[in-house]
Every structure is written in C-alpha cells, then in structure tokens.
Length: 457
Ligand SMILES: Nc1nc2c(ncn2[C@@H]2O[C@H](COP(=O)(O)OP(=O)(O)O)[C@@H](O)[C@H]2O)c(=O)[nH]1
Ligand SMILES: [Mg+2]
Image 1 (spheres, rainbow, N blue to C red):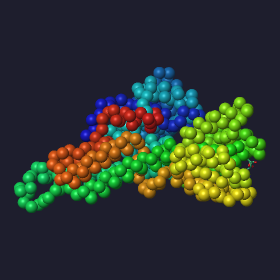
Image 2 (image 1 turned 180 degrees about the vertical axis):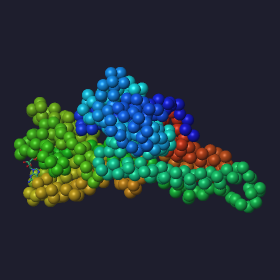
Image 3 (image 1 turned 90 degrees about the vertical axis):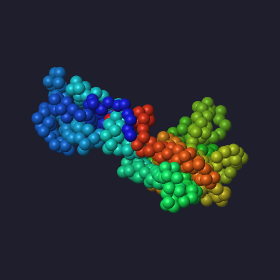
Image 4 (image 1 turned 60 degrees about the vertical axis):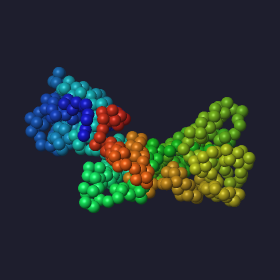
C-alpha cells in the first residue's frame, strides 16, 4: 500500500561524489528515458543505445547546443529493473576537476535532465520496490558512518537485518490478531470446540512487548554510533590533559608543557575507541586566572564540559586530590558520565583512590582500561548486546507506539476484556511496525526521510 504523490516520469541527474577536486567524479542519472537522453549527448550514441545493462562504454559527452566536447568519460549503462533505482540509468565517470563537473552537469541539463533532489535516487529505489524503508535509511547511515564499526552495523541493516526483525515481531502480532478475529467472526459455539477460552496469553504478550521495547532502546546505541559522543578532558592545569589527549589520538596534536595554563582554548578531534566514534576535546585547565585570554579559554572550556556526553577528570597522582578536585567531582551530577583518571602513574605517586582509573600518558599504562571505560560509558548500562540496532527517531517512535498498543492488549487480557477493542489495538501495533519498513507510508513521512540525504544518493 504505497500511496505517494511523486512523479517518476522525468529523468534526473546529480553528482554522486563530493563537490571537490579529485581524479574522478561520478554523475548519476535515472529515469525511463535516461538512456536515450544520455545517448543524445554522447559521441557513441549508437553504442550506448545498443548497450546491454551493466556495460561500460567509452566516449565523449557533447554539448548539445555548441556541439563541443565537454569531457572524455566512461558511461555505465543500466537497464530497468537491474539498477539502483530500478529504472533505466546511466552513470558517467568523468574527470574530477570542478569545471569539468560543472560543464558535465550543464550539458545534461541541456539534454533534458532535471537536477535530482536530496535522496531522490534512493526514494525512487524505494518506490520501485528495490529497498524497504529500513534499508533506505541505512544507505544514509553508511554514507555518513564515522568508524568501520558504525559502517558495519549500517551495512547489516542494509542487508535487511532490521527488516527481518520487524517482520518477525509483526508476524507474532498478526498470529494473535487472527486468533482474536476468528472468535469475533465466529462465536465460540459455532467453532465446535476448535478454540476455547480467552484467545490471548499474558506471558506471551509481555515477552513480545519486551522484545519491541528492547529494539526501541537500541536507539541510544544507534545514536552513539551515528553521531559519536563528545568527550571532554577536564582537570587542573598540568594534570596531564593534553598529554592524554595526544595519547588517545595517537599523535601529537595538543601542546604539552610543564608551564601551567598552556592550553588556552579547547581543541578537538575525532577518535575511534572500540569502534565508537568519540569527539575528544582538550580543554584549558580550570583555575582562577588574571590573564584575560586564559580566562576566556577557561570559560569556553566550562561550556565544553557542560555539553560533553562524557567527562574525563584528571588528577595528577603525584599531587593528589585537593579541595578543588573534590568540589568538581562531588558537584558533578550524572556520575555515569564522569570518569575520574589518576594520571602520571609512572611517577609512582599517591595510591589510587577508589573509582579512579590509573593511567600514564607517558608509558600508555592503563590505556586499555580507560578505553573500555569510555566505550562502556558511551553505550550506557545495557551496552550493545545485539547486532540489530535502530537508528532513527522515526523508527524508535513507531516501535514505542507498537509497544504501547501491545501493553494495552496485555492489560485487557488480564481482565479478559471484550475482543473488539483488543483487535483494534493489535491492528494499530501491526500498522506501526508496517510503517517502519514502509508498507504503510505517506508522502510526508517519505519526504522527511529522504530530505536529509545528500543530493546524488
Ligand atoms: N611522567 C609523566 N609526565 C606527564 C604525564 N602526563 C603529562 N606529564 C607532564 O606533565 C606536564 C603537564 O602536562 P600537560 O599534558 O600539558 O597537562 P595539562 O595542562 O593538563 O594539559 C608536562 O610536563 C608533561 O610532560 C605522564 O603520564 N607521566
Ligand atoms: Mg593542556
């Protein structure tokens, strides 16, 4: 049931690779008459028109108005339904200089192609039944993945793992619904003892609800992999923050110095810890300062710390805890976001206080434990115990709606409530799950999903 007002009659074109100078650029086209249109501006027209799907041909793109050569290209010809969008399609591999790309796009426009909107290729693939919505959303995640692990989780969804999981949940509800409807259609006495008693089981409903809720909660882990988590290094000046920053980065980025107050602004960098993308911030040490530049740095650092998902608070083991440290640690509200670090342990300082992770930025001792603490804190208590995770608010909200409907059915079952109300709730749960994969969808929902894509996807 795909009700959608969207016109797929015209042929679209867009740059699929980045808008920057490179060796090659890929320009994608799609549409029923895309091969004819492309052939009309191609030096080897006859060759392109005759090409089987999946073939690559060499030639020049010709400006249809001036007759001049635009670029020397390879053109891959795809014939419906064997293409990404399910439509006829030609992909051009041209030179990656920006003027080359611009003149290519303008020649295609003159040849009757329209600029594609964001996500329009993937939207056509969905409309033509090449992808369900969970896979279409995974395409976006794959393109924007920040670590190999995030990429492999999205790839898992692209190969249909989430769709299968949703279908499995839906089948369990549909089975219950058919039992209920059987009784609604044929009163018990007519069924001749084929069905007796209340048709639903409370334990089964409760288990179903937990499975749906568990998948809904994986949104948190999904977001961690998708967006990464901001991590701030905090502590007094000279606690060893910049040294730890460089160690976690595995390169020398931040200036390390024995002089207090060297790091005056914050610097940041992406790091990959156990496959989780973390955005690490080195901040200016926290101390009262007379110097206005340093004071401004300290103010900005305070903001970074307040916004961070995780805070690593360093205390120099040779110095030990002072009242400033104690105040910070005590005042920090959400302890699950705080990792206290006992730094410079190679110097054999004071013994490690409870709750601190001993680390040396010089010898890297304690690094694996610190990295584990970082990934545990990023993923939260539940961790990542499942390879199938969801990653959009849309998916999470629909799962919550399904779970709520099933909970209502569970309560109704406990009271042996009338079956027609129960049937309605079960239908709602089925619809919510159907919307996740796109069986039930409206134009608004689709536009929302595809608009966040980049053009050319
Ligand atoms: N021995 C030792 N010295 C360290 C360690 N980490 C930092 N230092 C030294 O402590 C001083 C301050 O370090 P820095 O990283 O700039 O601290 P920040 O002010 O907190 O950024 C520098 O002289 C560093 O070489 C460590 O793990 N072991
Ligand atoms: Mg520093």
